Image (cartoon, rainbow, N blue to C red; front, side):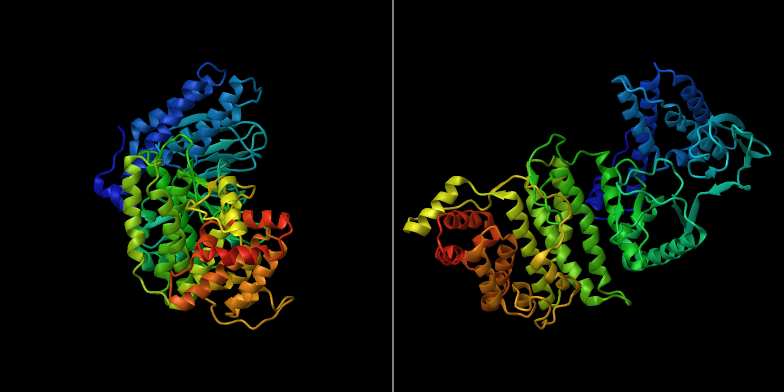
Amino acid sequence: MRASLTQEQFGGIAAGYGDAGAMAVLAAGQLAKRKALIAMVLRVAAPTPYAGPLGTAAALLTRAEASAPDAVAGVLAHPHLDAWATLCLHRLADRDEGSAEDLTDLLGHLSSYAAAGAIAAGLPFDIELPTLEGAASVPGLGRATGLGEGRAHVCATASGVRFTGASGTVVELDGPGWQPRRSVPLAGGWRLAVEDLDPFRHCYESPPLAYLGEARAHHLEKLLVEAWQLIEQEHPGHAVGIRHSLRSIVPLATPENGTMISAASRHACGSVGLSIPDTAADLALLLIHEHMHAKLGALLDLVDLHRRTAGAVFHAPWRLDPRPAGALLQGIYAHAGVTDYWRQRRRGRDADTRRAAAQFAYWRAMNQIAVDALADSAELTNPGMNFVRDLRATLDGWEAEQIDPVILSRTRLFVTAQAVRWLLINARASAEETERFLRYVRFGAAPGEFAERGEIRPGTVRGPAGAPGILGEMHRWLDGRTDMVRPSGPDPVSAGMMLLGGDAIGAERACLARLDADAADDDAWIGLAVARTLTAERRNGPDSSDPATRILRTRPELLRNVVQKMQHDNNAGAASQVMRLAGKL
């Protein structure tokens, strides 16, 4: 039976949260999906030599489910069953196209789930399991190690569960050689598993860590306990959803640069991958962020919120490349959780309140840009439009919350800088618009109206938005550090240092000088937009600008085209001339 949400449950998830009942419906949908995936694997593999062992495993799993349906439902809820089954279907499809890969061990993992189900149901059984590096895994329980190469034999009787390797090595469940899957008891009477054993947990783009040593496992357990306390205290709306949907976390390797990473997978709903952070507050943020991704992924398995065919692409301000509707919706929803985290974190007893306020202002502004781009999109289905409407209502409600005016101003300037950078990478001005603007500059001919935005065509740059150049110098504003900075460093009179020191006029002159020399200096266009925006705010208040600043912020690629063509014709001071005349539009 297809799981379905009530209108109230759908609205609760769309608003950014979701109660226990809604999470139960999502979980039922995932259980049905995993059963369907197993059935697909059995059907596709039926004409192959693997059908016999698969049939044996399926029969044991069916017998266990008949004996203890709730216990086996818990086994089938194991998040990485989806990843395994999906991989099986891909490999079976490759086989149909001529691949000679031996799939015995891959498909044999169904026997591991059958063993887990039979153990949960308390049934006697006897079955063979594949091994990986001498270990036989039982999802949700752990693995028997030291069994050697080749298939292992597992036998369950009234006296216990015994694994026997091809070499004759014997390991008892919970005896020497058994590695249990760890789980952490958390306040409220629930447990969260640390999944560092499952052989199919490699679905988060970043590599997972191997089985944790005791010291590291204890450190992670301590962080989880503290992070959950923080989530319960400061984020009760998210705590309900996390408690009733998250089953495990997968520790991921931290990149060499030390950046915290986290990920959710559409093929492992109920689990999230993350690097082990330094603090419980950081862990709480990662859990909320990825829970939002996972929750939306589970909803999308029940309801189509956007069209499945590739269509338009949109401005995702946290990335350098345009994104399709589905990816943008995922980003908006997950970053709504990030925004909410910092909104509440401002009030935490041990919080850096200035940084929390700046982060709240930043993500609030970023999400508004993204949701404005998506809200009226033809890419959304009717349920998708309702979803975005309810989510937007949550975001709009946060607009009324007060933030220190200086912090708010500086974070808005940073967002402006990122938006200009994105347009310089991805927006294209037409040849006709460029020619009209050139005639205006050269001959004073009325240019007419220009489009609000150029044609969006992905540039050559991809991935998350970093902060180089002037953006990098301004990054301190996102930590709430808005104090004036004295000129220092290798270039104390750089435009970035001037902006940090409050000298918007000096920064504008410095950027214009750079652009007069080279119109392809995108960093200078970014600095110029920030400097002019800051000057306009000082003169006329927030959200004010003049015509030249408006076109600089919305059509920087058009101005760059015009100046480049003038420089090609050896026009000195072209950028200064164009900006002066743009002010008269």
